[in-house]
Length: 71
Image (cartoon, rainbow, N blue to C red; front, side, top):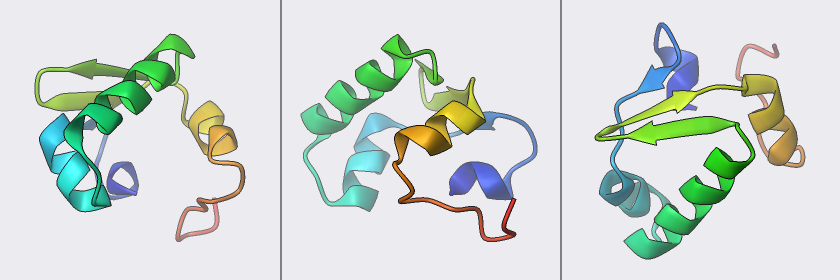
């Protein structure tokens, strides 16, 4: 969702901030981020997540996410 509102593919997010936003523990975010990285969907760096394969990321959500503009 944050990527929809930013120019480019970089989203300034930390694992801790994602955990707070999702209401989960930080280690769980790290496990999920690593899984998405292994699939080549994102790349995580210090304080930034880069979307590498947006269509693949949306497909991985199993229909749970649709862009607000319908794209």
